[in-house]
Image (cartoon, rainbow, N blue to C red; front, top):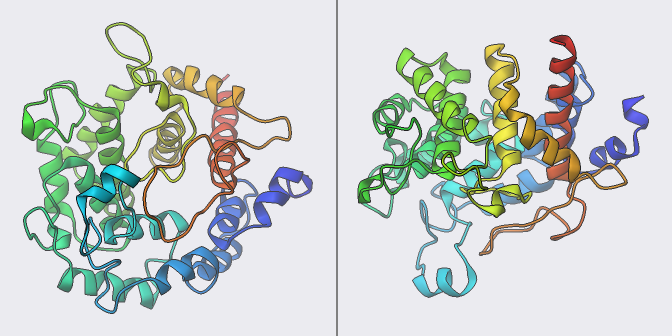
Length: 327
């Protein structure tokens, strides 16, 4: 019945990077079937296209965080560029490139040998200084089989008193930010999935999650007002930015890994997500970060988005199923 659903059919009529996740998360296909589809990410569609943009030394656009020859005026006039290594690696992880494939292993090795962070020249897999960047480096490294435990330990020690993280901590910030916190949480979750985690990393996950849950994923703790109206807009690709769908998809993945029940404090964000569903059953793309990209992944703002629809559908499927079980 699900396969006859026009929204499911629309999602399947897409790129391998979406199809394999639909098969796994929405159709409950056998692992051998979705793994076969997932393998196509390396050789077909967006995954193959992004891999074809890779430099001979394993990087993208000649830089770790910024393209080689980057002019700061570009960021000011056109937005942050997203073509360098860190964002390309994260994109491949989102696509689901098999970390065991030869291409992925070669990429990890080359980046370790050749990529250095612009901020201080550190080897790529040793991490940068900002929590946002290091959270994504942990996520990518853990996913692709790199030992990122030193960065994980550092992040666990960089928590602020309210339980989360802020990239402005080094400049004196004492309050966590939603964006920094979700970036770190995703990294710690990938580390836990890959290694089992440590007591310290799991505790850091717990306090970071509590930071978001205490705020219903988008509200200020003191006033209850939305911390930023943009958090309620559906964004893709997120890059380093935050929205409630990104947070809900994180909590879904965390609960599946740990066996936790859905926290009732997710309910308001869930209700908002439901309210944004279009009449045809899809969800729209509200926004994409401005800036240079290798290629676009959606049809444009205001139009139905396969990526947003995939994520929203699997979040609601998980929420409704678990709430029914626990009713």
